[in-house]
Length: 158
Image (cartoon, rainbow, N blue to C red; front, side, top):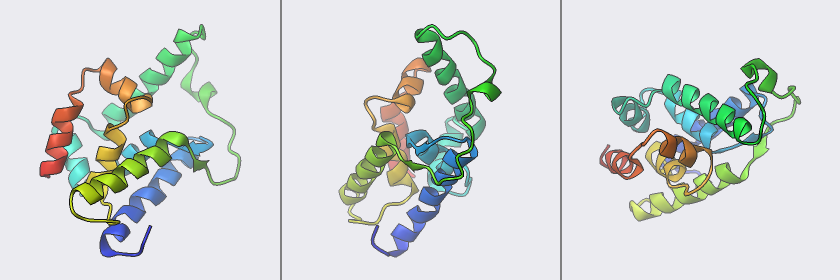
């Protein structure tokens, strides 16, 4: 990411997403970690927009845990205590997973579309996360009937 003022605005989100993944002992940084990183800072316009829609950090954490249980259930794994689902800490920094990389690519395109080439901010990253047609965030949105288009319009207006 080129060093610009807006790139500096995205950098803490990227760094926090790595921390989110590491704190959960996940081996890769995915789109949900980017989303949780945005929500971690309630001063960000995207975080305020999510919260105004009732989509707080707590809501997303519960919805993501529910999604994980549902996914396991779909392959025949019965209810398991969440503490047993954590990986053993590896001591290594998590690598970037496919959904995280793709969300950042979409975020970069949103920045261009919004007239700010190479200057992503929290809104762009949130839009990049929400635009995923597949994956964990898309499944959570579908399961809970989230109007992603409406939420995206609110983010663009923030």
